Image (cartoon, rainbow, N blue to C red; front, top):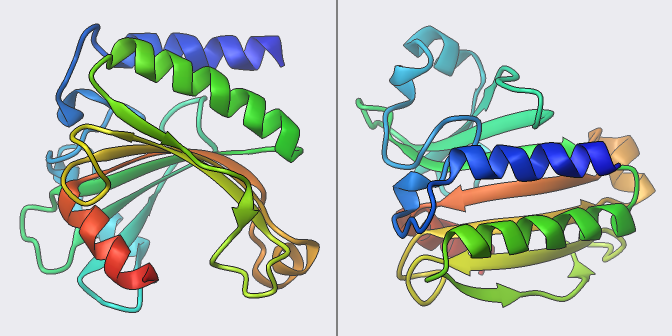
Length: 196
């Protein structure tokens, strides 16, 4: 576990410039908000895993091939019909064994990001039921690190742990995970409309 945490910290140090205050300077798997996904993948590669998973069809998700040894999965969200394929959200996920291990990782990564981005405001959430499981048995805990003052007026880095119920894992094939996400202001507003 110590080796794994060291990899996370080293990776964050290498990809986040010191004293940065722009959301574009935060990278996940070498990619930043507001750049074109075409810089990394062809249109054919993007279309292979294009997925409309939201009630509103304004955005779609692209599941990317593994880009590094840090994340088990990387996905981005793009605005529908955007011919430039501008990245509006990036999410890196690691599979976890248990929730307490994930929460420890989350706390270490929070401190590292807050150290690199000292102007961020933050909101550390409590363990609660995941809205994606109506039974209430799946749990999640999220920390939001804001580039402005709130989720709706600027980009946000989300660090979260999700512990799916056994039923969800069996039915949907979802796995418990630790996630680092960065969302643009526009994508934050879209998510608010989809979950509220």
